[in-house]
Amino acid sequence: MSETAGTEVESLTSEMIPIYVMGKQYMVPDSLTIMKAMEYAGYKFVRGAGCRGGICGACGTIYRKPGDYRLHVGLACQTMVESEMYLTQLPFFPAMRASYDWATTEAVGETAGELYPELFRCVACNACTKFCPMDVEVMDYIAALKRGDLEAATEISFNCIQCGLCASRCMGELPQYHIAQLARRLYGGKLAPKSEHLDAMVAKIADGYFKEKLTELKGMSKDELIKLYQERQMEPHQGGEYWKPDSEEGL
Image 1 (cartoon, rainbow, N blue to C red):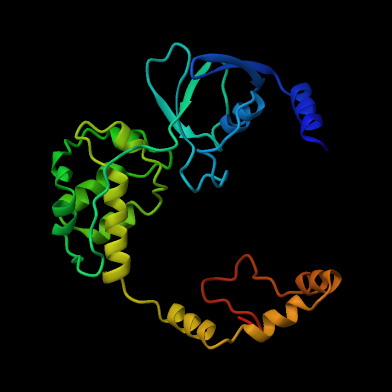
Image 2 (cartoon, rainbow, N blue to C red):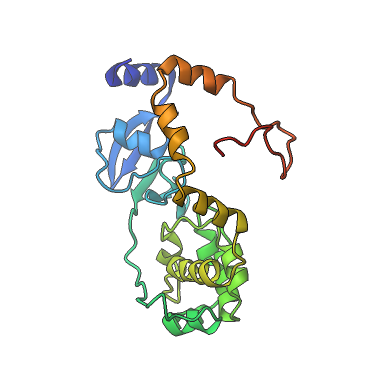
């Protein structure tokens, strides 16, 4: 189906509603996400459209609903349009990011405060958490870093997608998402226990373990690949953490 035909079908099966992009009204189907609605309205994304799957954080969007004084946030690729929605995208927030030498930077609690002294300007208002489209407890990981707990900050901020929306609402003008990234890098790179199975897999790759199998796969026809895929042993739904296939050839 052509893009035009798809648009016509969408229009026939959905109610057309008004939305406002940068103050201009557009009529769009109510079954679309913000990103698809903007494309329907004629916008072409050059920036602010990455994975389209709610992972990359490139399509942070701020919007207001009719009769509501509050600002709301979401990812344009995930949030559905609503009638009379006023919106604008914030694909990049120009927060300051500290520069440091990874090799010499110590993985200690004090490092975050040394590189980002504004960390201690946090007044615990929690506006950052309320503005996070991923429901990350932003204020909590900032509090963890204020007390020097890199591990807790890493765990709490794990789902951060670097959209920067937290920084856009911060009274203390903290670049929270950059500070959290520092914590994860320090803890993951220098403090977390090393993964033995990962080291073993990297060694396998370096030794050329997969070259023969990949060469074999590349020489197969499409039908042979489909048959191989369909006959593979699948992990059962209740397989558990330690489930392994009968054969580990090629794994």
